[in-house]
Amino acid sequence: MTDGPHILPESPEDRQSLAAEYALGVLSGPERAAVQQFVEGDAEFAHLVAEWEERLSPIADDIAPVTPPPRVWSGLQNRLFPTIKSEARHGLWWSLAFWRSVTLASIVVAGVLFAMPLFKTVPSTVSETLVATLESAEHTEKFVALYETGHAILTITALAPNRLPESDYELWLVEIQTAPVSLGIFAGDTSSQIPVPEPLQSKFVIGIKLAVSSEPAGGSPTGIPTGPVLALGTVGEL
Amino acid sequence: MANTQDIEYLLGRVALRDRDAFEQLYTHTSAKLFGVCLRILNDRAEAEDALQEVYVKVWKRADTFAQRGMSPMSWLIAIARNQAIDVVRARKSETVELEEAGSVATQDINPEEQAISASEGRRIDECIEELDERHAVAVRRAYVHGNSYEELANHFDVPLNTMRTWLRRSLIKLKECLER
Image 1 (spheres, each protein chain N blue to C red):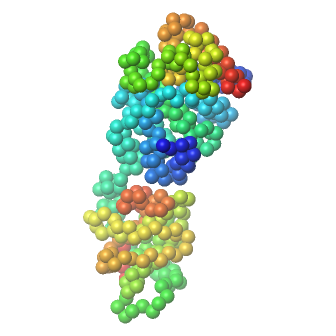
Image 2: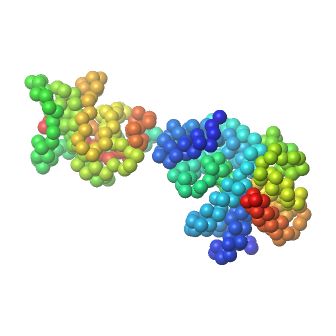
Image 3: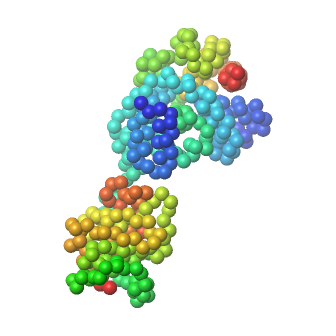
């Protein structure tokens, strides 16, 4: 048997033997490849292999642990969780063409805005309402953000939410040539009210951009977007 | 020291994409898996690469652990052994087989010693002791060193088919012994 069995053996004894030999590790390269295919294609056979792996694993008890060097962990992180910084220079964020193509609210959207719940207290005379529609050509999600400058509350509504389980939408304030600053996470199922902290309030002016990215539940662990940017928009007057 | 339930909990969190849990899992289990890879690969650089591949697989497949019905360390060790053995099998020549005395991890007991000395009461050891001495050594060499049928046949100076028969019969006996 030089190339490996082409089909899974019929008899239970032969299947047991093959599962055992695979778990022990003694099969040749081509045989292992063939058996790996059987494991992927046949749940019952995969279970036999798992049983054998479990049965034999106490033999590993006497294998001494050896601490791996730190570079293995850092290599893993770079590979599994690359940071946005390296992507940002070439990606969506810094694409001038993309930014120029983002437009302000349309009349249809303005109609939707008037129907949306606004913050309840009477606005002060110096407060203005700023708005942004956030969208992108590559994603279906659209968001509308309303910002009351006097109250420093941002209301964000998802128009076509499609949030994956175990993920959150995260809202970012984006000034050009600067790393995005998080305004917080929101579920998007209904309108969410996000208070804007004092240091950021002065940045909330016409022309500033807002973006929504998809992040792991609880938000980006790094402080900058780690997931795909779903929508981007420019803040303008209502 | 993390116990089985801790590892199982961490794997569950990793399946939910919890990166902190993944880091903790790595902290608690990577030394063992690195040891396993080193015994099979006998090469530090290859073992480091293999270890990285192992944890990429753990990250990607953590959600399949629950359906395997295995204990968490057995599941992890199996991923490590499969990764390391696949690398060994892919090597151009399968002739390099360092003796335990010259290998990178020298603190552990070599398979020959294990076969001869009394076990600490582990069921698998008792069952392996019931096998013919050479078969017992072959089983341990296969498991710990990742030797192929061909390498074992060469080591014991028997025809390939004889080694296949020895091991197939031994594995069946082990199963029967463990099920008693």
